[in-house]
Length: 500
Image 1 (cartoon, rainbow, N blue to C red):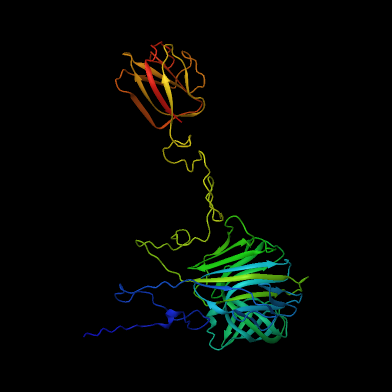
Image 2 (image 1 turned 30 degrees about the vertical axis):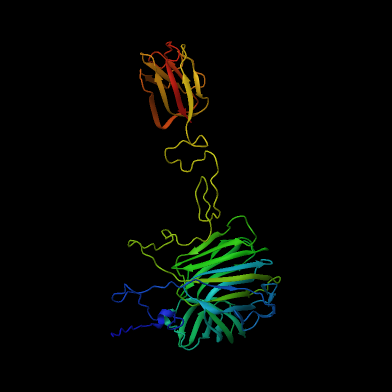
């Protein structure tokens, strides 16, 4: 018996293992087909959804099943899980900060959903929902001047002089000196010592955390309940936050939705209150500096400003959901849609409003029914819309000996056609008027149509109909001419018209 051997080569890079953890120079993954791979099976990675709830009642703590409070709760602040919510208070201590971080991380395409209520919005308070990479906690810092601070990074951090000018967050300070949590640029790199350019600091030493060299970030700050800052960063570079208009963060709160995938990130939101239709509204996006190739962890962070807040604010978070899914490229006839302007319709997050008139926008959120009646969308095609059935309406014609006006339709309409039989050897003439009450012999007819002797009915159809803006009235006479009123024999012409 012949033996067939199968060899399986497994690259650790295919399972998302990074190389150097922070400098973005992980091993290259070769996605080019090697040899003849026509028989290779492809298995789509299923969507992975992590729902972070706060059902356990905990005081000064969070559920260890999903996260931890990094280096303790900030001075004057409080963190509890109560009533199915995560409840955080800011206190009134200047520069105080609390970071809650997930134990799990995510890489690739994702969707972050977070429901928030803020009891108030005042200055000197900052609330963050973010996905960040973590460089390290409890890192030694030395503030040498008002504008320079040096932090000792973990061994093997991977940062070099090539990273000068890139920025990240440094916060969660514990020690002496004057400091403030914030995003700071790298000024120099010397081994494990990274010097940042800061502002308004004073000399001192202690420990801090470094994070957010890459991030998706939603930041609530300032006094306006209907605004939030949104931004993304990759390898130390960001576009700069967009101050987006949102639904109010007051009760019952708003639900923030951040997506990131394939070089595009979007921020949308909706009210938590029940609505009769889909209510998601598109707020902002980012088309560059998207960290969808980085391992990121969820952070819930509050940070007071350099001036003490006037009062304590309560932040209630109802739930957080993170959906992670694989990005799969599709090529059809060698056409590769590569931007939001020409995508394949493979994802529908919500219904879309299709108004009967006007312009469809990206923010409309409810599919509407087409009203009954004669409404026309785009007014395309040749069709009759005046009646419920869309068909024409017949009106019987019988010619009297003395020509007389017969009303087909006393208002605006369309003449679609007619079927008439002339039993007289002489030609008779159908006069059609666009007048409600024309005077025969005086009012000129719009149409003067000859009806010759015929053993078979004469049928004429006007495709699409002839429009009459005032009325459709007719008469049958014995002579040619738009004002002719020649007498005829009774019932010379019989038949019907079709109109709308």
